[in-house]
Image (cartoon, rainbow, N blue to C red; front, top):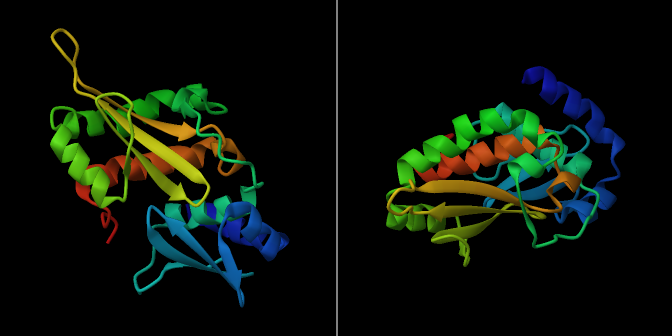
Length: 199
């Protein structure tokens, strides 16, 4: 992961900061991007590409530093579609689907599939916005132009509960599928353990 961070920091100075800010929906001023991630406030120095959470001295996990840089590098300004797509429908998603189901969706279903009220509380703690899909569902804003949603079906006789994480149709314009998998895993863990899970 340190190699991936180094590669992203190497590419970062190639972007035009004001253009990147406009395309990514972030703020840029005096050599710093301000980026929100599930309501958390991240600061990214330009051109160094150093990523830090505002108000915290401890370093962010490497994967989040890499993903934040990738978001700023990749964002092309595509409009949010408000059309949801499953992970398997992302570019190359079918290749990574087994891992996503095993490590991201299955633990979330096990933890909250039988607890819709617990799911609601966890989603609200992440600033989730209620939706009308499934039995319980919430919309989240991962990055400024990367909406995601989590949908719970409580199940019925003969059918077990199920949880799915879906992405806005514009998601591939902002992150590659490997990064979208990591963001989905963060959402799964944050719903199960709380938003400060990496502190």
